[in-house]
Image 1 (tube, rainbow, N blue to C red):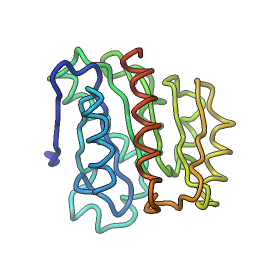
Image 2: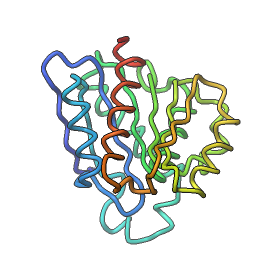
Image 3: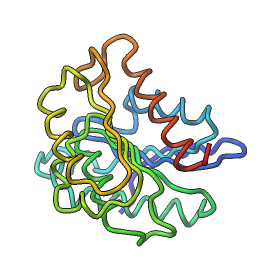
Image 4: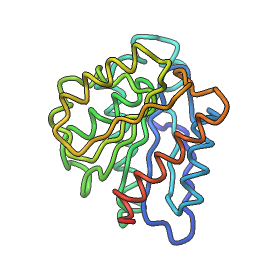
Length: 201
């Protein structure tokens, strides 16, 4: 299975962030591309790829099949490790992609040195329930203050996590962080988390 993706490796990159998109999203999402650009400016490489083919995405059951999505993310990690194994790897997940990121991270260090950090934006992290307690990578959960249902499940998931973790609530933001200035806050939070946990500064 080959899936399209966009890999950007800045000069002197000190980490690689693999994006796991959520439902109704893709590597072309302006939100994810914006966050990736901010990470690139901080000398973090990024890999944006589609977890599902167009045909697979048309079946909504696939969108919520977290073990299936996690398998695709794991495969992308292995692909990236073959090419840039010197870079510590983090995951940036959104919506159901957040669950896939944590599910994969909860599988342990099966890929290279494993996962160095996870950031979830508006993630349905409750769907990773069986694996949450096994996650060892430092994890940042970002949720919009107006995204009440997702905020509730993230607070519950945080109680299950045993790793270093934080929950950041962005004021005035809904699920897509489309309100002025809110996506910029997400990008800064993610950048600082990955710089600290992957690049050590």
